[in-house]
Each structure stands twice: as C-alpha cells, then as structure tokens.
Length: 209
Image (cartoon, rainbow, N blue to C red; front, side):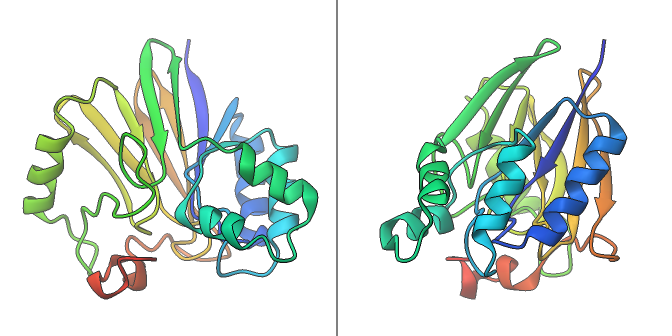
C-alpha cells in the first residue's frame, strides 16, 4: 500500500502560498504533511501562517529564521511562540518500509549552510553532487528532506533520495512524495511555475539566507 506525503519548506510568514499548498495536498489525498523549517522570516503574517500549519497537522522542524525569531521574541503571540518552541531540530520516521529524515539544512541537525546542488541557472553542479554523495554515505536513511537553500531538486545520492521541495514563497513550489515508490509530483503556487533556484538563496553572497 502506498502513502502520500505533502512537502513544503521555507514558507517565511506568507500564508497565501501555504494555504494553496494545503488545498493541493487535500485534493491529492496526502496523509502526512512535512515542512522543512523557516516558518518565520521575510513575510509579515507569521501568526496566520502558524495557524494554517497547526490546523493542517503539519509536522515541521526548526529553521534558522525560526531560531532568530525566538531569540528576539519581540511581539510574538504566545501561541506562535509556543509552536516555534515545540519544533525539533530534526525528525525521523518509518513509512511503508522507508526510513526518512527531515532537517532544515543538513543532517544531523544543521540549520545553516544547506545542501546546494544547483547553480544560479538551476543546473546540477557535479562537484556538489559528488561532495554530498560522500558526506551522506554514512547516513542510514532512504529519504532525506531538507530546505534552507531555496532550491528544488530530488536527487539520488548514493543510497539516499535527497529532496528539497523549495520555498513556497520564493520558488512557488510544493511537492507530493509517494512511498514506497519514491515518486515525486511538483506543483506550482501563486499562479507561477516552480522556480528551480531562487537566486538570492543560491548565491554565496547570501549564504545566511
């Protein structure tokens, strides 16, 4: 039997694309929703965004913008603060015989740096593919879900399928993963085609993004 998982990341306090992604997930019959972190940052509707994720039963992880938001705490509504505080740095699971791992940037618990496989034009960089294939060789999971870099990809690196669904806000993207087949479906948001690389997030000048 197959299971379908809705994937989003880097929603950055923008509830519109999140609501659209959740509607797609409902239509596609997903049974689990995962968010790769950075719920906070950039946008101005964090409370509404958190409410949408909470109501949908979305399971997320802590991103660097979420950490910064908690450190400042200025003007945070109690419910939003509690939600962000409840986010772990990583999650693991077993579904349909596949071991999965979710982290914002890279395992085991990094929220900065990230797995950048694409260049500024959205093309795979062979040296980065080789680098991360080696780095993930000891990683005993079938699927690795990440965010942070604002890139869209699904690449088999050694024994691990590495997926970044991109940012709902900047890449205009979400995805549905079907297990155990490992099939990905990509969806555009906000009336846009998915953008494989959002240049700010891809540029080394903005490695802190």
